[in-house]
Structure formats: structure tokens, C-alpha cells
Image 1 (cartoon, rainbow, N blue to C red):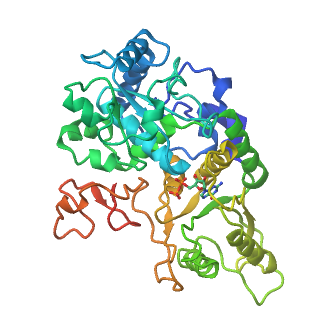
Image 2: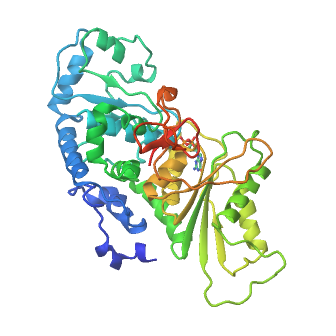
Image 3: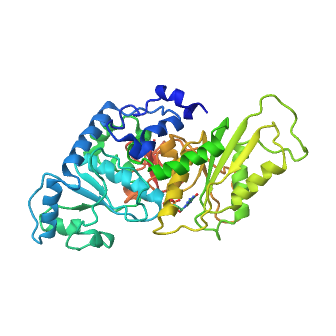
Length: 443
Ligand code: GDP
């Protein structure tokens, strides 16, 4: 495979057009610069303004991050009950909730908000995300130190809490602590706020590549995760002519019976020609010189979809003689909470999907959003049926690779532009999502 051979590596821009800073210890995070050899070169270049803003952010983070004089000063203020006044460093503390996909899109959103408001992002990865990602910023850490005094309160932050934003506002003390609480991709909403519009326009002239750049900048698989990703890639995908990722996320197994979801997937494959059909009348494919080999990776909590698709391509030849390999890295059955290895597998699978040439994701799934964003792919979005009926349009193609902000606040107050079927706002690049009627996304 061209992308993974060392000789080609010279031609690959491992810094992604200046998105990634130089000067990291490469051995400590092999994926940071090696991922470019595995992924398709992005057709979306970061703007020079974004690049310079990231370098400035990195300086700020280095000056204000853990183990600095400024950080210690802020801690002191936080622990005194009558904290007031300003500090030169302001922070956003991110704490985890929900699955890994939700966590990644909300961290990316919080980071962008931090950049826009000159704050420093510190993340609490606890034990279940420990060692999954590399540090994104040079010569400092984005991990919230263990002894951060408010950790317990952050997990159960309620309105009225003495450290809540509302309370601090009331006490006329805005600068000490700001808490961002969302497990979603709220970036499209920032584009609707007049105070950020101009700056966002300069940072991201290319509106559909916001998450793509943020994700490739922030989330580098740790060496342990990169081991899982590259071993899978080399064993099953590297020699294939084409790599196809199918992400099957079923939120409610009772409402969406296996046989119906299976039928919907096959309907999608056929309608969109993602894979060749099988010829049930033949035992052996007709001899042909150019057999295309296609490697299909299925990511799902469950084994059934993989079992039946693998079996289908084993029992019958394809109509055109293509050779189809079907693989599934894991089937965890249930979503585990607080489990580091479970999250490690999920992160590896998100990355493996992102290496696909062709991707099918599932509606409403943030897991799929991260894969498409990292990969720079516009996926076919499987509409997972609730009930016994499959649909005529099983998997409409996404029009942009951005994640959907599934439940924006006061959505109904965003004016609807007449005459444009998808437009929901006066900002032309914020529109309705393909997979969620009330959601908004960037195009
Ligand atoms: P979402 O619920 O689909 O929006 O995605 P999240 O990532 O936020 O939460 C789902 C969680 O369930 C993941 O983080 C994993 O822990 C687990 N999960 C769901 N689908 C898969 C899968 O295909 N592979 C693996 N390994 N885990 C999965």
C-alpha cells in the first residue's frame, strides 16, 4: 500500500499544512506525524489565520497550563471563598460524560470556544480515558491536574452552586471559572452568534472542514491505541484496492430488530453501489484478470451484522468477480462505563473507520461523526429503522463531513429561510442535518 510505505513518506506533509506544531518528541506519540501516511491527503487546507491562532493558543497554554505560576495563582483564588478580581489566565475545564464520540465532539467544541475567548482548555480524562490520546499542545499538558480543587463539584454542577457561572456572575466575579457543559458539537451554534461570526469566518473560510481540522489537530491516538489501529490496518486492510467502513450503531435493539437493520444495510449497499452484489446462481466467479479486492470493516457493538455480511460474501461469488473480505475488530455487546480498554477499542475503531475510502455511518451517532471528520469523508448515513419497515432511501449521502449539533437550544427561534429547503438560519452555511430534523450543521 502506497500510503504506508516508508519511501512515500517524504512526499507526505506530516504537519498537515502547518496545522500540527513542530518540535514534539515524535517517539512519544508516533501517530501524530505517522497518521498522514495512512490517511488520504486532505483536500481541505487550514487557513494561515487558523495556523497562526493555534500557535498563539499553544503559547498561552504553555504560559497558563498546569505547573505554571499563573495556574497556581488561579488555584489560590479558587480556594479562597471571596475570590474576585481578574487573572491573566482564564480557563475552561472539560469533564467527561457519555460515550467517546460525544466526548470528542464536545472537547473539540470547548477547545474552539477557548480559542475564541482566549481561555485555556483543561480536560479531566479520569481513569477511563487515560492513555488514549497524546498531548496536543507542545511542552505542556491539557490534562486537568488530579489535585484540582473543584473536580467533585464539577461532576455534579447544579445551578446555584457557589462555583457555578450564574453564581459567579451574581458575585460580579466572572474571571475565575467558567464551566462548559455540553456533550454535543455546539460549534454550528457559535457560527450563529454575531460576536463570533467575523473571527470564525477568518479561522475557517472552508465551513465544512471545521471539525476536520480541530479533530486532526487535537486527537492523536496514543502509542497503545496506534498499535491497535496499525496492526488491524496491516493485517486486513493494507493490501486491499478499496477500503469500505460500515458503522452500525443501533440505539435500541428492541425497536430496531436485527433482521430489519440488516435488510436496510443491504438495501443501502445495493442502492448506493457501495459493494458488488452476489450471484446466487453461480458457484464460482467467472475468471477475470482484474479482480478488485475490497476490505469491509464493520464497527458495531454486536456481531450479527458482520456475521451475515461475511457469510453472504463467503457463500456466493460476486457478480463481477470482486474479492470481498469482511472484518470486525470487536463486538463489545454493551456500552461499558468507566472502562479504559473499552474506550481504547472504541477509539481504535473510530480511527480504523476514518481510514476508509468509502464510509457508511449510522444516523444520530457521534461515534460516526468523529470517524467521518477525522477521515475527511462524506459518509452515506444509514437510517436505522425503528420498527419493522425498511425505507426507500436507506442511506442518504451527507452533504458535508461536519458533525450535526443534534439538539441546539432555542432551535425554533432560528428563523427559517423560505425557498431554501434545508436552510434554517440567516447564516447560509448553517443548515438542517441530514439525519436529525431538529439538528443544525455546517455546510
Ligand atoms: P453514540 O452513542 O453513537 O453517539 O457514540 P458514543 O461514542 O458517544 O457512545 C457510544 C459508545 O458505545 C462508544 O463510545 C463505545 O464505548 C460504544 N460503542 C458504540 N459503537 C461501538 C462500536 O462500533 N465499536 C466499539 N468498540 N464500541 C462501540
